[in-house]
Amino acid sequence: MKKSLLILALAMFSFANAQKGTVLVSGNVGYSSQKSGNSGGQDYNYYNFSPKVGYQYNDNWTVGVESSISNSKSTFTLGDNSSKSFSVGGFIRYSKPIGGFFSVYADLATGYHNADQTYFTGGFNPSTITNKANGFYLGITPALFLNINKGFGLNFNIGGLGYNTLNNTTNNGNDTKSFNFSFGQAVSVGISKNF
Image (cartoon, rainbow, N blue to C red; front, side, top):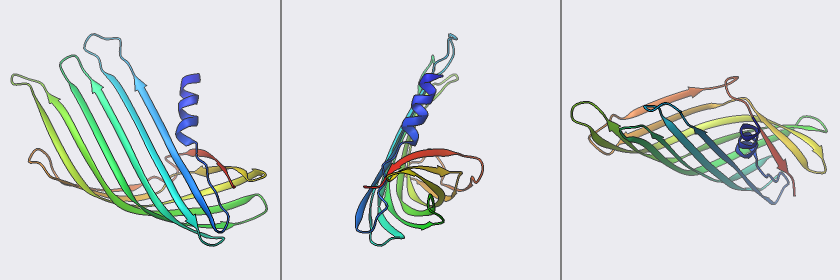
């Protein structure tokens, strides 16, 4: 349980600056691991790092760049499945105070992303197949900021809206387009500091 809470805290941790003429630095770190005790079972490891840097040019608007790197690996008795992805893009944030302790904000982000997947196929002729794809993403994420004391605060997010495309560059897979509506399905809590 303690390990899960530590992982949750790291995944939601961010530093933020929300004053005119300053720099916003934030990021998310996530890690997940699962091990199976069965002889034919599966071991799974996943990590993600998503930094963000922006400039707040007035009291309500921030523009900047963001990126994300993730890696996952599933290990089976007969072979491994792995996935790597990378994205880089820009974002614009609008924030609005709604009281002495609260502010609401929304991030609109877009950019390029790619994915590299390798998976093992079993059966009579086992083999390893690699898929590579690239595309773009577009998303909006609303959140609530609670100012606790002297610029320290908490950020609350309950999902967002997103659209992604991945165009396969190999002959082993299909192009994909996805639309995600996750309001109320995902919850994250972050820590921020205004410098």
